[in-house]
Image (cartoon, rainbow, N blue to C red; front, side, top):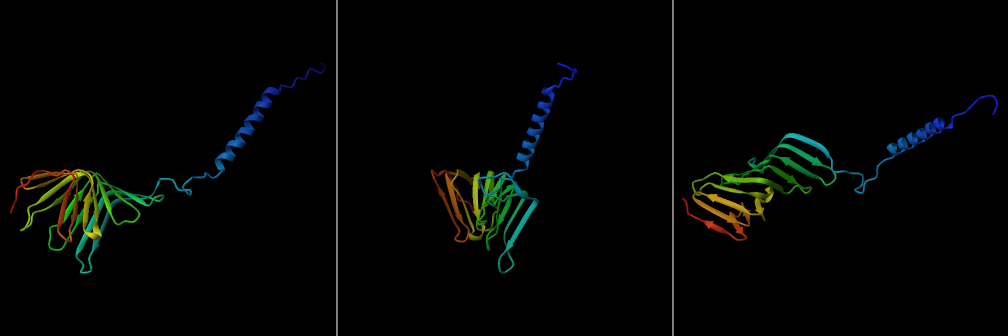
Length: 191
């Protein structure tokens, strides 16, 4: 070899390979991601802090009230999650039922609210009826129909009575309470 010029191909080849990889990675990053669910992921689209909603009947009387520390809405399945929800169902001529729980769920049809975890439903005493407290892990409320139900175990306390059941159905309009699934306990008539 004459002239003494040596070309080192290894560093030039490595630099070219890095440049090609950078271009390929940039192209991947700019490419839109395709999701199986029409482009929606299960991420919240809005969050409401100190959520509150109140409805009234035609005479202007309160029907039901729902509040939560936070409401998180998801666009992909149109559900809303509630943190520490509180609910009040008002029926004319009866003491209201107050419900609280750790979590709540409202599905897209918005006709019902599911209360989950440490659920407590309470009605104060009236002239005709002693106060009652219902506890369990799940309770579904259909406010417009005045219905409460659960297919999970519940405990109903009223005065000295304590009743365990596999589920319940309450119709506020017809003043009907039905306990289901292995009902047991002590019932003492009060008032």
